[in-house]
Image (cartoon, rainbow, N blue to C red; front, side, top):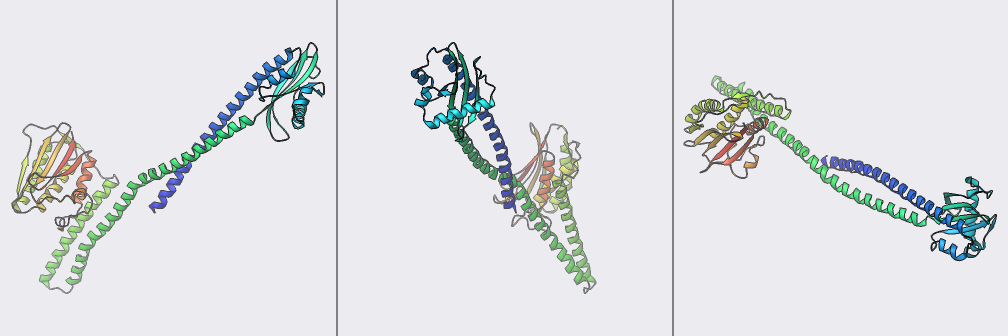
Length: 424
């Protein structure tokens, strides 16, 4: 499923990005070509003003002067006396070129109000598409001189300009194709990065549902079996089965409560009621609550508090107490007779540090990255029914809701140390 979504998102992102880039490129090409054409035409007009002025001032128009004015083939000049082309045009141009001049001259006569009564000098410049489908700039002029009047037709081929525009378009096309490749590669990696957390969350949800189903199925099976056996049991056995059903029912209730807490954390619907809390008082209360349990198991529980008075911590007293209870309950449950557990509180520069350190067997390095995962149990230490594998997950969610951090380290001399950092 995620592969199809990945591919579709890649195509969508790459398509949209490239479409936007293409529109911008087309606009850029249009503006660049429009400016290039305008500049070219204005340059042609400027050259014509100079050339026609010089042409009108020449007392005698010679072949050499016209050849020079043609600027090594840049321009083609045709001179007409009334309807007759001068010999320069007939001699230097072939019949096809002569026909081109006549075609341009007729086009100008039909489309421009050039004074052809030979009373004043006038000229017009325009773009002309010949019958051979070739583009030219044309200057058509009627020039009045002291000795009379004549017409001039000057052609400038746009082949070089069109080749320049073609090269420019090919360059833009190449850049767009290159950008398409780059955008596609970027979109592929970006969407993959975008989908990775979603895929991980989906996998975690699947694992959570599978683990929850497994955890609920075990006590439910025991309850159903006990109900079935209860029908045939005597009074003594009935008490045993009822006690078993009660125990398993409480186990299911605790598991469901833990799952509801995590669901509320995921949906951001649970309540964190922060207030100014004296953490040293809270630590003492938790210590007193767990001291009998530690003593019953033959373990030593100690508390360490700063001698100086501490400022209040803005937190949810009940939730932070729940975190400490989870950590202490784990430390005592997984410990053995003679082990020590230390509950301590320190004040740092920017945070409070609440620590639960035990001196038991500790947690293996291979299990450390997963201890805060839901339903995770190390093979040996997480097999007791008293623990669903959700306690540390709940503790982490509570600490995160307080903008704090929780971390696991090895206790010096052996064991595990959990440290909760809460901002001042």
